[in-house]
Image (cartoon, rainbow, N blue to C red):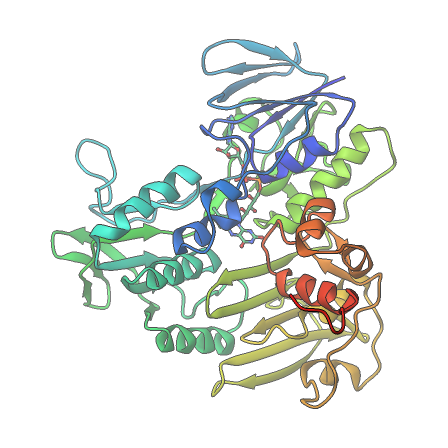
Length: 453
Ligand SMILES: Cc1cc2nc3c(=O)[nH]c(=O)nc-3n(C[C@H](O)[C@H](O)[C@H](O)COP(=O)(O)OP(=O)(O)OC[C@H]3O[C@@H](n4cnc5c(N)ncnc54)[C@H](O)[C@@H]3O)c2cc1C
């Protein structure tokens, strides 16, 4: 059976990996084979080398770069590429990701239709390399969009020595994930790290003087980075008359309105929701791999975990804390820049926000994933770790890496972080579990006494 996957991004790579024994063709329109997109801000920051981004693929996968699919011929079960060649499929998977939105700012696009040379998108490796090359000649940068991506990019540019400002149209930072109090703590953290944020302000024009905001400020800027959100990439599916709302609509078997066509990752809409993060994209890829291998599997859409990776800023969001119904248990300490909030329904953690202190994220994620029913004092205790108490010991079946679904036991079985990385794929997604993985391995590796190194 030939499985053709459109898009050679993070969901596609994970799915292809799970389809050993099949004829798998990955068609990507970028010039690079699949790479870890979420480490791009670390590359920009200078803490990650670009050579370590590649998502290794097994030999059964035929990856074709610079191969844009322009049409799906559903009757013939073929896709058509930009060079007009066609490729037949038994199963087609759309993993086309999302497209960054261009905010309505006058002057972003020049009369010749190209972006002003100060303006940068930040979605692909090529965007990252272009911005990286522009940093040495720049002194000031403005990031438009105060979401997870915007804050990562802003930190990266600040760490590179640029005077960096963030403009966010909403009333506070990370407005899709956290409440106003957590947003304010993040703004303070950023200010402490030297980055000014303008919230409730919209950029309206880019002129020779800089970026003009609707609050009267003009921000002098050599670089303007657009990170103001994105939308699922659905044009191909729409043209093929598949059911599309915000994303390509799929059922619990990740199948579209055509039984031979599936969709996963940022482009898919399941249960009325689109996602936009790696953990659900990889979970969908794992479920679809089982389905295509003929095993019973369904996707219930329950899991959304988002982590911000940037030096000096720690954020983890489980579920949908802004809309989840339940009782709120909250500890906020603006003085040290930490904010922890659990939404608990019938004793179960249904959502959580952790800003500034992720020391308990492993344990909280475990309860969240398993829907553990907690006693009345436990949610509070989770947020108020005793300073003198030893750190909690994660049981073997506790999940440590939300991106790759790796348990504490699987990590403990490895002799080194490198082995855990290679054999379990822990730390290869957002990297948020790196400290926990290191800690588990250090604690489980017998220390040699009386030896010299
Ligand atoms: C800079 C950046 C940082 C991020 N940081 C995080 C993070 O810290 N944590 C997190 O959980 N998520 C993060 N995300 C989001 C995360 O990267 C996505 O959720 C994830 O990549 C989704 O995987 P995907 O395969 O659906 O889409 P992508 O990885 O975006 O892959 C889609 C691919 O399809 C290609 N494509 C589209 N149309 C066609 C076509 N017609 N023909 C051929 N190819 C096509 C695209 O060019 C792209 O290469 C980040 C995103 C970006 C851009």
